Length: 504
Image (cartoon, rainbow, N blue to C red; front, side):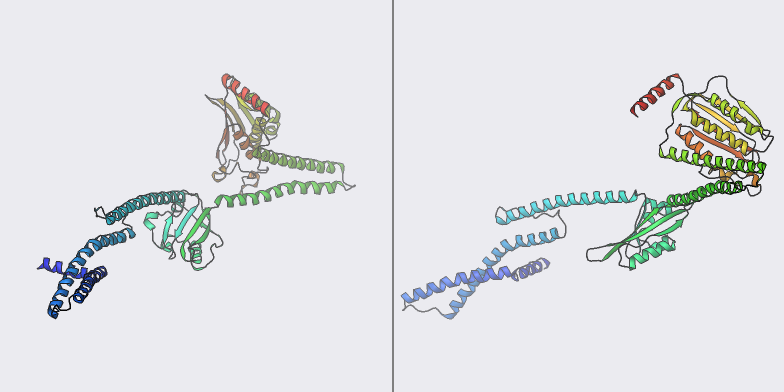
């Protein structure tokens, strides 16, 4: 019963086919019209023949209709079945199923059309795979670029849900992209200014909004970071909003540089104004004709002292600027660092004698040769030696030790002075930085704050390093490490230096 019902239903659907109806009408008409013309012609030739009865004519029509039905059904089955298969296949291909194949193996035109369909799906499948691979490659490339951008990138949808978060933003806000994907930004990041920026970008129709600055304190960093945030709308051609891209740039260093520039200008102005004020004031006093001789000499000494101080400040500042800009290059040669130390101490021992200080110099008997600029090395030793004298109380001792090792020469200057606080050790080599003491004004540095900065620059130029150890009220130890040269190395350096001079 089920099989017969299935066949009956299939025949019923096929009969309703428009092609079957057209074939039936054409076949029936094709069969009847010739018979009618033949009958009319035959009866016109034989008028005496008896005309057939109506039941006979009706029976003939029924037989003709049945024959036409059979022929039409067969022809429609032969034509519509492949067409139906091709129609379903075209729908599958249109849906993107490029692996679909048409199973028609005849050698007629329909079979050729089926083979063309299969060839077309094969080509579409190949092109689709190529495009898909290209799309995947481009997506991976884009994701790699975004994740490795030095700036932080946060992409949200029109409902402020997180879509993309690169590694830089993950580190700053200590979150993971996979864990926060598609979650509201306000639940993950609690920075009010950033949330307000993305909200304004979502609501406003301006593509780019003014930047803002926010401060964060990552756990893996000891200082706060200042971030500059910019948000931009991403829209389709019709203006529909796709998402918001927020770029976060670390401007901490720029802020510190701007602050240092401001402080540098202020310090330079202050350092220049102090001696100029003294020079100007005491010069006016010298114009008084009634001033005594001894007082005039005192004023002149003050003017000379302040002029020397001003000259020293300007020279040090210019030296540092020239070194940093590369306009000064060290004229290196083979030096015995022992001779530099002895010359500096011998020429400036009077500074220590004024404070009744004891100087102990410990140098080895063998030469300690370094490849360095003689004048710059004198300046380094002199700065450290004069600082040791200046920031030590009377009746103390200064030890200067030269120690050779396998590949370097160490020059150590140890004092029994006031010492440097731990928080100031990291800043001691910055320009114009001076250690201040609120408890004892005598201990506050009275120099320009450029000496140690210049020492650090010169030592770096000679591929060396400088270390400092200091304890408050016990003294400081400055140690310079310079590369030692041997005979073979000295010959190589000499040849290199000479060839460099020739090129210059």
